[in-house]
Amino acid sequence: MARMLRIQWKPTGNEAYDRLLGQFVERVARYARGGSIQTRVRKYERYRAFLRFLAAQFGPQDIRNIQPRHVAAYIAHRRRAGVQEKTILAELSIIRWWHNQIPWRKYEMPDNKTLFELEERLDDKTFSEEVRYRYKITHTRRKRLISKSGGPVRESLPAGR
Image 1 (cartoon, rainbow, N blue to C red):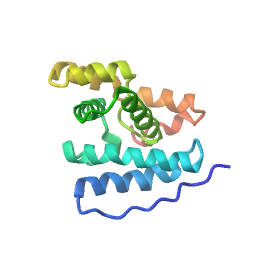
Image 2 (spheres, rainbow, N blue to C red):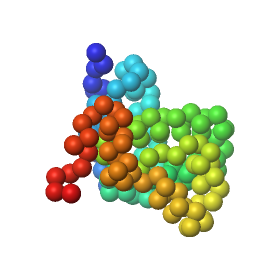
Image 3 (cartoon, rainbow, N blue to C red):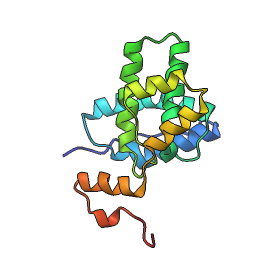
Image 4 (cartoon, rainbow, N blue to C red):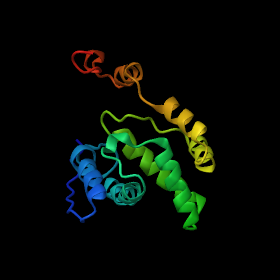
């Protein structure tokens, strides 16, 4: 049986980063399954760097709002910092793994080819919106995701919709 990841976080004074990190720890990281505790801790440490960047550049209100363009901007940031492609690919793997753990996320994460193309075309609003729309999770897509995971389909939509 997989154990809960016991991690603590302390506020840093950066409101956006503290909000994202708090949501991540409380809603996602503690309940994530897959791999050993040590592996999840390493992934957690690497993902925090992405959250720090996200808070500084975009400041989303909710961790569920992470979009493909946020990841593409992080790729561009890492390239400017001189990080090798192999390291960026490893970081994308970690970002994708944690992103899939986020309950009720609003966007799927595209494949690497799409992310790299989006990185090159970040200034192209039309392309950015097209990718955003293509990977937005709709109620129909959410039903499919839940039914594939073996969960009950009737719980996929909030009451009253």
